[in-house]
Length: 131
Image 1 (tube, rainbow, N blue to C red):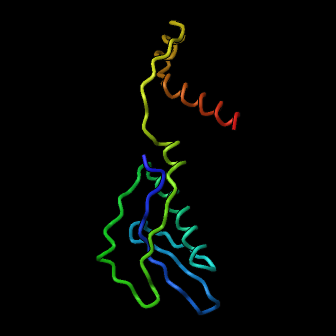
Image 2: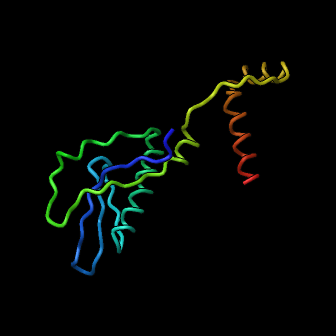
Image 3: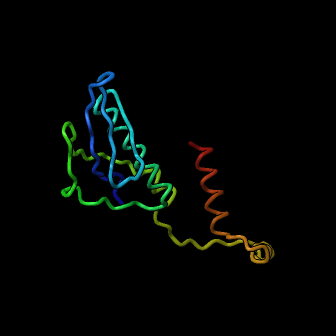
C-alpha cells in the first residue's frame, strides 16, 4: 500500500485585497482552500482531500487534468495526500481466528453483535492508550 498519492488541483494567485493563493479541484466538489503562500494552500488542500477520502470511505481516482481549462494566474499543481490515517480506518483487513467462551459466542449471535468489530475496536483503543 502506498502511504501517499499525488492529486491534481488548480492553484490561482490573487493580488486583490492582499497576496494569497486559492486551491480548488474539479475532482473534489466544493473544495476551496487558501493560503498566504502556495505551499500553505497546497498543505490545506492536502488535508481537505484526505478528509474527503475518509468521508467517501474510499480513495477517489482523479479525473484526467489534461482536459482542464486553466484561466489567467491559474496553474495545475499535484498535491501530495497522506493516506496513513485513511488506511488505519479503511485499510485492508486480515482474517484472524480468535477463541472466546461458547456462552459469549452464543450471546453475541443472539444480540447480533459483530465479534470481529468488537475485537478491532478493543485493539484500537489499546493502541491509542499505548501511543
